[in-house]
Amino acid sequence: MPMPMPAPIADADYCRRLPKVELHAHLSGSVTPAVLQQIWADLPDHERVSLQPPLEALADPTGAQGINTFFAHFNTYIYRLLSTPESLARATRAVLIGFAEDGVVYLELRTTPRALPNASPDTGVRVVLDVIDEWNRTEKMVVRLILSVDQAKHGPKEAEAIVDLALNLRGEGKPVVGLDLCGDPAARGDITALRPAFTRARQASLPCVLHFAEIPAASSVAELNELLDWKPRRLGHAIHVPPEVVERIERENVGVEMCLSCNVLAGMLPDTETSRGIADHHFGEWWGRSVPISLGTDDIGVFGSISSEEHAHAARHFGLERPDLLELGRRAMAGALDETQRPRMEQLFREFAANEGVECPWP
Ligand SMILES: [Zn+2]
Image 1: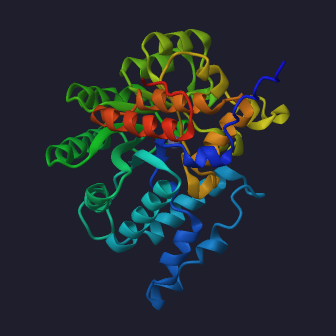
Image 2: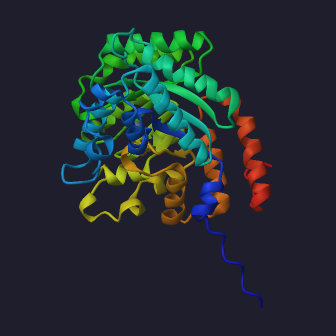
Image 3: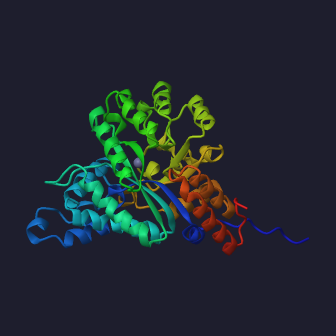
């Protein structure tokens, strides 16, 4: 009797060729130290001397100081370096090129609006959107932007202003597709204060995505139910979710964005002392449910893992075979905020499946 064929493994090469859907990437955190180094090297002499070289300043993300200290340092550093329209545009373009070269075909990038020095509050976002507009005119990867409200830094007034900005930009035809809740959940005040801004966005058909259950202290049933009452389309991380809230998420078909390397390297998973790393990630639990689900890199500049590597990690640690990764792509697109892109994506997946001789979840 002939031996059965071994199951086709979704290896790193396959994951690189695979069309990928990236829904959880922060713009500034996605700028790599190498790109920052190039930008720094091109600064005028008098500006360069006041900033340590990025490859020195950002040398050791997982070192003695710990990733969270590093993260704060990264953010301070990057905002100082990317303080002109030129440097911000250059960094944005480099981020897009990085995702496209890795085979991402649909990207939802997110950014917290901030004013560049001596300019109006929307300048930074407009610079980013100009780069995205130009990109979308010529390149295969489709890019959309989500504006973030930082729960540790923004109160109701700032959140309302970000909603206004998002709606205005969308009204101008810019590719702004959603509103995000981000920032340090340990450093925030009463979360219900932000509810009106998120409700208004939703009523104006601007869907929201929320960082969710990132730390145990921000994961009570009451608090998570409050966030779910905002009717988010997707939840970022979704780590410390009690069973009754898991059920609600599934019942309401809210998508989840899984960030494997980020959660492991930042020590966000429970029982990290005894952790087996990615094998213990809650991706496995959500994958076994019916919700939209995607893999996100979060911050490639910090965690150093690109989308194809995240897909290869998921395949290796959770036994995903080649057709499973197409199913993952299908479930990722089910959570994408720009629904008009779905037919195009389905076509890309079909072509890929035909080329690879893999069964496609779309007929
Ligand atoms: Zn995030």
